[in-house]
Length: 247
Image 1 (cartoon, rainbow, N blue to C red):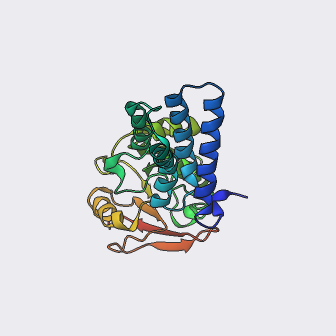
Image 2 (tube, rainbow, N blue to C red):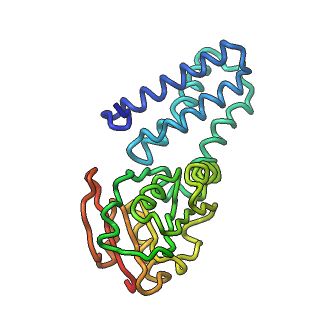
């Protein structure tokens, strides 16, 4: 059973327990303390995908280093050099950059979420499709299932996520960049899985940049400033909102 589907906070408790188990194991095996701290913190970042929201992911990722800091504060933390605490903080900032906190990092797209998309938005084999904020590549994989002949592109601000996404999706062109600074005018479709708070900004950008006939696709959250061309519920229960330029 996928821990991501467990009632909260069970995914966080399990993730923290696994991080602690990993930390104790590698430390007792002789790994230097700062490196053991870094390895367990990296595991917490990876397990943060079990969180169902941005704040839950952040809590999972930060839980181990924070709990370790509190523990060492109670028993005396002199065994850990001060600079060692920069390691987990650095990992968090690499994966969750400060300027991306207003967006929606690591919101995985279910693989079957976009299978009905070609019915509502047919694209040519030469179509250019962008996943704006591609994370680890779940959206690109769902887009490939829907449009196997299209040229797929991904933009991701976090360079570790961009690198991992490129490894997972070698058939897509993935680059590091800011989705709000990138030019959307060259794409036939732009896919988003954002947050309600960022949808007005996405709608304004799509209205200003998408060429006539291009599509904007939003998973879960409606761009209320725009009139949708179609909307439907995915097999997993999420909504897909489809808009066509001119908006």
